[in-house]
Image (tube, rainbow, N blue to C red):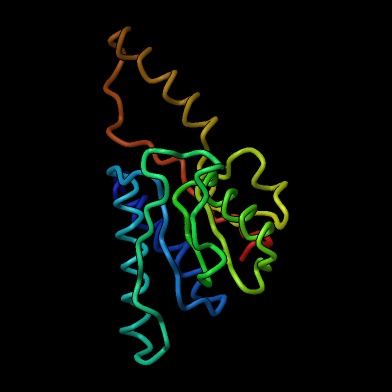
Length: 176
C-alpha cells in the first residue's frame, strides 16, 4: 500500500466516523493544501460521495472546503465559523484545537452542536475540553524508522524497502 492510499484512507475513515455519528454537514479545513492534505481531501470527498450513492436522500450536505489562515498551522489560526457549522474535519490537530477553543469562547457545545476531528494526535489533543477525536500517526516511530534507514545503504548491506507502513489509527474521543 503506498503513502497516497494511506492518506486517502485516513481522510475517508475520519469522514465515515463523522457520518456514522449522524453528522451531515462535514467541512474540511486546513491551512495549506500540500500533496498529503489533498489526498486526505480526496478521501473526505470520496466518503461523502459513497454515502450519497449508498443512501440517496441521506441528507448529506454539499461538501465545503475551508482554508483557514493559509500557511498558518498553529492553534491561533483556528477555523472561523466553527460555531456556524455542524462538523469540522481538520487536517491537523492545531487547527482542530483552535476550533475547540473558539467554540468554547462562543458558548457552542462540542460535540452537541458542533463536532470536531483532527489529524496527527498531537500533544494536548487528549487534554482538550472536550478531548479531541483525531487520526493518530506514529510520529515517534516514523522518526526512529527514518533514522535507521540510511545505515544499511551506507554499509551496502541490502536494498531498502520502497514503503514501510507504520499504520494509522482513528482515536475516537469526546469531540465527535
